[in-house]
Length: 302
Image 1: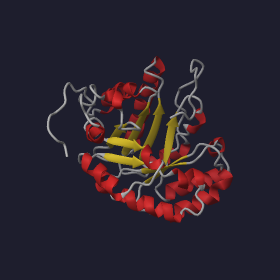
Image 2: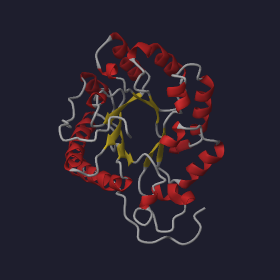
Image 3: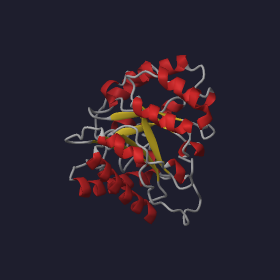
């Protein structure tokens, strides 16, 4: 994730902002679950540097999703941003993952960036029909709005959301700075997301602290974290997230999606392990950790 990345982070204040007042209201209306759901993962599965570490030595390209899904229980699926998957791909992905694994597909760029949500009924239909083929492994789709999509264009987004299939869980990532300033359009937008049970994405990135708006619209938190190679601030930021998630869980949060972006993909598993440890200390819930593997398991997987 290059959005908001800085070459020098020495002067960045990484402290988490206070919650938006609406967040507590949203969580107060939620029925607190006996056991919340934690989904922690990465944005890619074709991570060849993991071969011999988190993937077995000798693992083939076609097997990498299988091995990824034995290490993590969710995937920020960026591949769908570039093309709508066909039924064969969907079937192959679904069969590669175990029960409980969740895909979070990003809406295609033809919808969000190229056509800016206008005249996109057909690609939206094709995309939703495709990902519904993931069955119980469909977690939450997310719409990443381009940085130039302003609140003045709210009517386009409102119309798009009005026609978006309700059977597909959806999150929206705002990027233009004016979405995080109070106005009639932004109030209406966030209220509409609440009414339609559409989740907001929280993006923790060095160069755009404003996108970390801390406004939940559903009892689900979707967090995209951009780290800097396991420097000290990565760890203090993850501690702060463990604190905030613990707070939200006490208030009624039901589901956590947390995606780890690191420039070097080898840094992502240790960072997620650290977050898991910090969450366990606070919540008492045991979270399965990724494990390094030593050798390839012989025999065909498929």
